[in-house]
Length: 134
Image 1 (cartoon, helix red, strand yellow):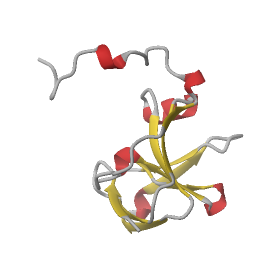
Image 2 (cartoon, rainbow, N blue to C red; image 1 turned 120 degrees about the horizontal axis):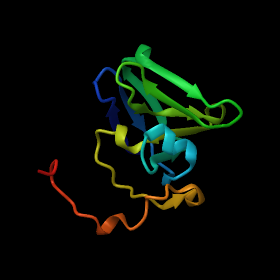
Image 3 (spheres, helix red, strand yellow; image 1 turned 90 degrees about the vertical axis):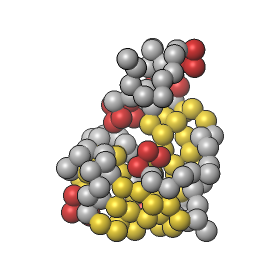
């Protein structure tokens, strides 16, 4: 059984995940694009792992998009995405970027690519920089 640790950007919220992840997807749906302000969300899913809030639980807010199953948890202070328990407690969704632990699992697939942002293609051919470009 694995243990992973994570936190928000400002460090107010800290958590531990005990157990294994079932899957890791890069979701390109319109809701995840809005959630992240990016091309996709990178989320880990587990039906058996346990989420333990270690610090800052009062700084957590949850939003569910009306008329959908789409929800997210985030830090009220810095806005960072945080783990979210969905489907009546049956599914733990963990934003990969919220983890401080190094992941051994890699994304299994891009999902909802029919909603993919029009600028999200052939990104591997654009220049890369180790830091902010000069």
